[in-house]
Length: 227
Image (cartoon, rainbow, N blue to C red; front, side, top):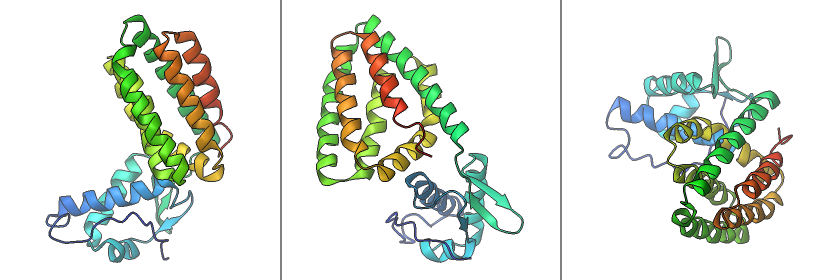
């Protein structure tokens, strides 16, 4: 079965990413993972090893290794008849991800406020808001979603709670998949999300952890039901 083009603009030069089997496997892994997270490969899509080999210019062995890694991350299922199939994210899984994401970030923001670190992160948050405003104007969903993750990650990182940072990193790919799905399904959410980010930054700058939690709850709720 042929696979849809994933359009990740990954360089195919053998002088860069395909010199070793490990590098080729990494390349195939990143190529397919990005396509799944962006939604270019929808849940239930079967991916042909042969077609992918031709698309990115690597042999079957590194592609198979990449598929094994992606299956271990629950992004693919390996089926005897269909081969590699993109694993859909169920509504229950999405709800679990959003619930944990809200809990981690809300707790982190409270620590940022309590420890007096809001001023340390506010300038970088403002720069991200400016970048997202440009992305909204350009209709650049990819860039908006990328900065979205950076924004929330910066707040969690400012808490200096390494356990929270670790948990957030574990959730990141699934959260990005949800973000891409929502923003592409409902483009109006780009501006709404930016408005929420501005409110979150303002609450943090004002040292109002309760306000931050309330805005975050509304912000996260906008992702529910997107699948």
